[in-house]
Amino acid sequence: DAGVTQSPTHLIKTRGQHVTLRCSPISGHKSVSWYQQVLGQGPQFIFQYYEKEERGRGNFPDRFSARQFPNYSSELNVNALLLGDSALYLCASSLVANQPQHFGDGTRLSIL
Amino acid sequence: KNEVEQSPQNLTAQEGEFITINCSYSVGISALHWLQQHPGGGIVSLFMLSSGKKKHGRLIATINIQEKHSSLHITASHPRDSAVYICAVREGGGADGLTFGKGTHLIIQP
Image (tube, rainbow over all chains, first blue to last red):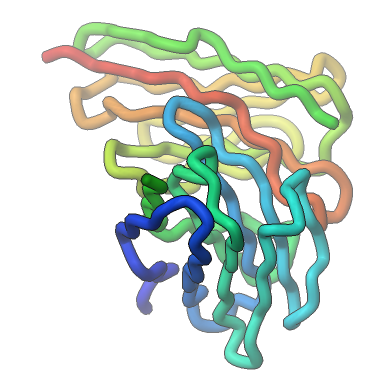
């Protein structure tokens, strides 16, 4: 079975632009979580979706939004990009929310 | 908000040495995870613990709920164990996601 897949792998944007990151969970996994990892730090929780509903949100501004589709894939959207949004964005899936998470390889976002 | 502290931040050891990485947290949890991150970003889940001890190959993870502390041990370390090891905790039922430590950067020299 394929693992968690994220696209794109790398992305370069400029300040003020908008970005959409995509995540396909492991087949059968209904929970998807998004994390931001700034260089040299541990990941920070952004969102969790389960059964297409937002179940948890971290301490991120409203410029960050996400959704989960009927096939359980997910998108993370970030508006009005700032230099500080440069980071590795990780998606993780699990069968249900409190089970071990399987991580994708991440999308590395650079803001110029 | 849970504060997750890891020690040491950096560790360099010789091949074959016994390695211990520590993690402490400030608020009661429902589960603790140990994760491995290689250069380039990919994260692999090593263990999920809520009590006691787990072993997988040369890796052993323990947790003491009363002391809010966990350790990850690597026996007979090998250069391929070189990676960043991250401790993460989950509070409650899971809707709040994981809270991560900053990681321990481990280098095993041949």
